[in-house]
Amino acid sequence: TLEREFAARLGRRYALATASGTAALTCAFTALGVGTGDEVLLPGYLWVSCLSAIVRLGAIPRLVDIDDTFCMSPEDLASKVGPRSKAMLIVHMSGAPGRLDELMSIARKAGLKVVEDCAQANGSSYKGKPVGTFGDLAIFSFQFNKNMSSGEGGLIVSDDEHLYKRCFAAH
Image (cartoon, rainbow, N blue to C red):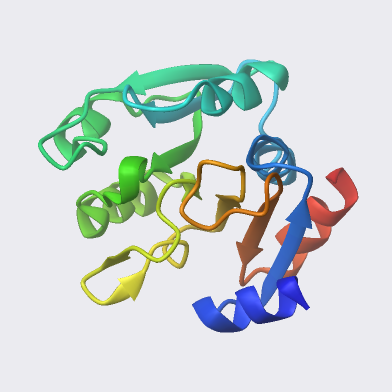
């Protein structure tokens, strides 16, 4: 019921409950095929789980400066995309989405897969569109101090059946 209703609320096709937001991040990057030597671009303002999910898979976190939105600076992101860059993690810290139009444009032009970390932004939106609906995958956390809590737990959403099945297998 949680998965079905969460997907419907966001207008996403698939949702998968996980043990935690950290587990959701690991499943998401696993589903995207992130592995040894791949770079994942992410903002310098983050939670440790963002880094640990990347490092756990043997990938390299590449930190991107933040701007006054407290999210990734599109200008710094564009300068840090390189030949080993495989994915990007947009972290909506403290409910604050960044300049998503610009960030997604850079990601698409560079061929990067995008994961949104909405652990602290459940219910936030950007230009009227809910966070968690921009990336290839998005994760949520229901840990005790999040704005929607069940004590612990996480969730992944996507519109891509193949990625959903890979997340399911990884989880």
